[in-house]
Structure formats: C-alpha cells, structure tokens
Length: 181
Image (tube, rainbow, N blue to C red; front, side, top):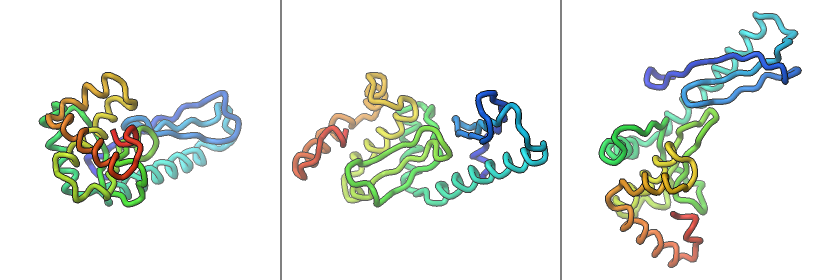
C-alpha cells in the first residue's frame, strides 16, 4: 500500500451473521462485519482482520502496478481541466480483454476506482481516448448514465465530436452503439 492510497478499517459486530466474516470496500474504508456472538478469541479475530487487510493491500498494489503512466497523466489533466480536481480514482490502465466496451470503472470492492481502457482504441485520435477516459472518470461521481452523468461528461470540450466518432466506428464495425457511449 502506498502513502497516496491509505484506507481505514472498520470492524462492526453484526447480529445477523452467525459464523462467517464479511467485508467490503467503501471509498477509502474496508468495512469488516463479524458475527456479534463471535466464538473466536480476540486474537483469532485480529488475525482474520489482518488477513483481510493484507488481501486488500495485495489487490490494490497489484492494480496500481499495472497502471499506465500516460493514461494516469491524461486522467490527471482531465481531472484538473474538466472536473475541477474533484474526481478520485485508484488506477487506470490498458486492458486487452474487453470485447464490447471501450472502458470500465469499478465502484466498490477491493478494486474500487480502477479504470480500464480497451487497448483496441490505442491508435484512435487522442481526443477520442480522452473522451473515453473522461467518460469513465465521470462514473466515479455518477455510477449510472443519469442526466447528471451526461452533464458531467459534457464538461469534456470535445465530447460531442468524440461521440460522433464513436457512432461512426460502431456503425462501421456493426457494434451496438449504446455499448460505446
């Protein structure tokens, strides 16, 4: 875990749980729910919590190590110029396993804030790639395609132009246009 990727750990005793420990990632917090009537010793509980924390650290470090420096720089610039520095993400990288989508952004879980951009777009104009990155960054504020989401995306000055490009490419290759916008 790096200094710029801190997180808090919250352990909550949950009366609905009987035997298992559940955990989830929320923003910069790991919430660990343990059975209220836990039969384990405090020492065993501490060991299990430490194991969960190490797993989160491992997954976060793994994603961070795969981050692409050029995409990170692009995202930082877009954040400054289009989003007033308000968007937070964990990592951004190219991936080769996207068949339909051009990008994705994880909300929640240990990969919260990981943005992935399909490497299929690497040769496309920079302003189109910037739009795709801005689109995924907007999902950090609005997880769905609500009117607020589209208003946020439109802060990218070439959004309409990039959408036209994507519509044309999607038509050319016979893809569902809705998957690309």
